[in-house]
Length: 89
Image 1 (cartoon, rainbow, N blue to C red):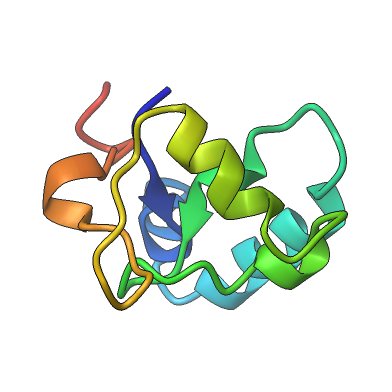
Image 2: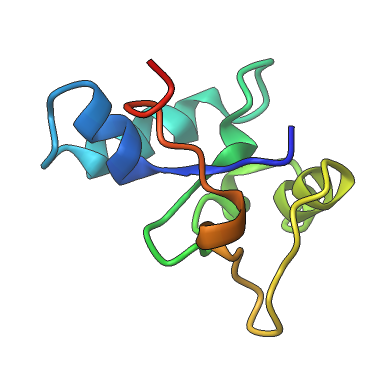
């Protein structure tokens, strides 16, 4: 809770650094499941996957309920909230 990651971070962790798009497709398929895919953003902190949730605002609502702060432009400050799976090992 309170952290996000990016498609690129996950791809690099899986040793497929150029496969961020494939990670995006996997997260799209996982929307609506127990997998916390609402925590995966693009490299600019934008909620590009939000349209795949039950409502267009659900992704942001979940993140805000977990304490993730948003900038005025609607993006997440990755410096404050990013979790890099490679650093977690």
